[in-house]
Image (cartoon, rainbow, N blue to C red; front, side):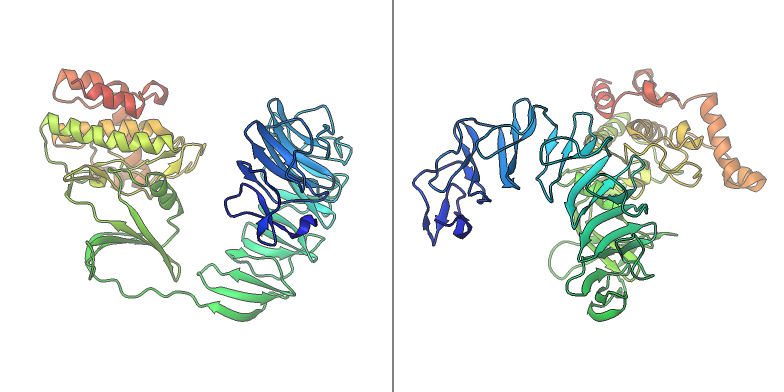
Length: 492
């Protein structure tokens, strides 16, 4: 029986040959056969490799098994990852956090500390040292990433092939590799030099002298090895005139209410820059009742358009004009906002722009506008910026240009929102025009910062003040989590 003619059955429990079962045994899952005629399989007693008769090739069992490459297979055992020979014998004693497959006499592995390196066929390290990441070898070279995040190529002995470093990089294919620098994606030669001067949003490997690429305006083309356009597969999409009621208009774009022939009305939000962060944040909240649903994304010309569900109700107010609400209503809305923030924080994101204009009150409370959302892992995403967030609601560390954005900033802003709703006025207020005339926006920001250092806003009731006081602390580490604050508000 020729293992090359076998296929994995549709239910993945066995292999077939010419459409018929190749053996009688059945497994929980099988993968395809590799040289020397063995296939990974998962049985009731663990993972193994089977031969063409469907029998295990050795008595040992593992947590996971993968295909043989160059006579060695990667397996996961209870004490770590390793490579085994065809009879199940370990290639070496050491265990790793993860193992790849051997290619061209080398294999990438990850050690317990998260570093990567390459092994030789005898299972020993191919060179001294390690990398932040190391990929498979192809055409004698592999991609490695150093600690600053940049990538280059190394040979089988770990020596740099050309010494050029890129933001992202691929292995070589027919003498060319995909590479991304500060300007975009391109193709490079084996010496690391760009093949052509242009850059693209994405590129595919060259295939018989031509490659499919996407331009920054969304157009798809096929280019040759000089970077010249051979054929246009998709021209750039030009935005049609947008009708409907304008719900908001800012320097960055507009928000429209769009009536549809079929279905409920929706919101179209278009910007003059990328909505990548907002898209990621909304996808992280998909299905949450307190966040708008992301229905569609369109890139037109150099604009980015998002189609969102229309949330019913009215905004709580505007950053500088907030009507007074009963304390019970303010607490309910604040707790709803904190529930959205809790889910967002759990996904690793921070809203960073909670204020009355971004909170809709209707059948349910909805937190809007994730354009300022940032990952909680960003250390200093906007250090030096002075014009983001509603200054009446952002915490002092954001006003002070520390560039610090973590989940506690949403907790602070939610507490300010609650104060504003109860008092019917922003929690912090300065004479914006007077300070602006004296020193521009930096002077306005400094005035807000001085006010925060002088005192915190006082809610109407002492009970509410006691609950909100920790959330309004100037020390981010002293603030409760979104969940803790919501739980405390439930008992006011």
